[in-house]
Image 1 (cartoon, rainbow, N blue to C red):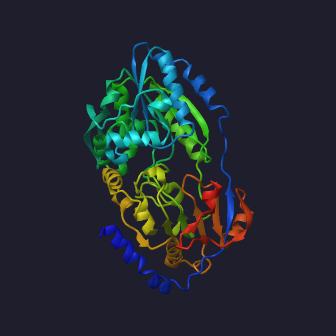
Image 2 (cartoon, helix red, strand yellow):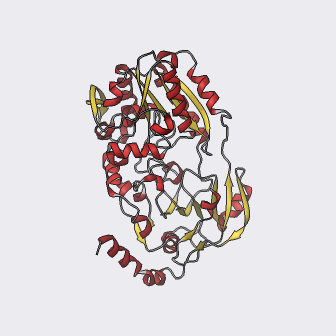
Image 3 (spheres, one colour):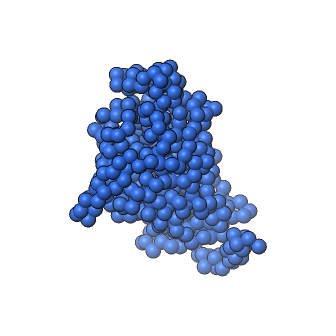
Length: 450
């Protein structure tokens, strides 16, 4: 008998025990709530892209005969297929030969095949984009630099994807957004792609060894070293609003990256979604995944930061995760930041990509095991049970589809009066009880809405 089956059976057989312990827990009624965030968007992304590429010092820096590596990461970007396809076409029209490389560090199990599949899952393939995918985990040392660790200078090597290094020019395509584990002028964006994404697994391990506490220095220092050694004529930088629409699209010349990225990061912060309620007894997340956030569920939304380097976020007594997204391909990074999950979720976990990513980042907490409940009903009731706050008898609960979709959420009855006076929240429809099927699994209203 398979171990996971034994585990499932042992947890399932404990339902009467859990029901006895949680018998006094009543799940409150909920209502749908719309949250409003800054919603600026580009109406014609394709026209903006073409306009950006034709600005001086961008596409004209790519000369006939060049081999051009276009680097793409593991997180989905709005309009990504179109952006890569049109960029490929423009590069080819300039007489150069483009190809695509994954710039995703240790993601997808740190394998070339897994990273190719990850690109395909976000809409980037040779068939869709018109250029070959050259995926390899080989990264070559191109020099070294140094950073300050505990008051002393420490030398660190600089690595770059071998295929990208073989090209005459490198063009990263990135989304700029707040990081999930540290704060600084350069977080998730251009420099991180040049350092972690294109450093591949060996580079990611070397840089994470420094620790997130000095990433604000590591990222721009190593990125500057890469930029001094590799021809990056420009990068395509995107910022999205909370509705996953393209709000900013810029072709940033290579010699302006270090100056421009901090400004774009500030813009990204201004667009970020959040939960407009504080001091929750429970936060229920229907799905987490690497396609949603580098931490599975974005701690900038949930407050579940893996370390102290981001400060404090949303205060929550109990976090409950009910499943993994299809696009995460088994990676359960972030599950360790939950208090409760379910057997169904655990059976979706692939330990190889999960542990590879967690070990590489030196953040083992994100892959630890929460308490595993037999079903969604038990997990949600257990989350309420855990709270020792003064509001636990009338629990303040928010339920979200995932941290990438917080425009429409569900809130429990004790939050309705706050929602009615909040300038950025609108309640919708009548009150309802959460629905569960015959197996006590949640019937999601948010899945239908999204």
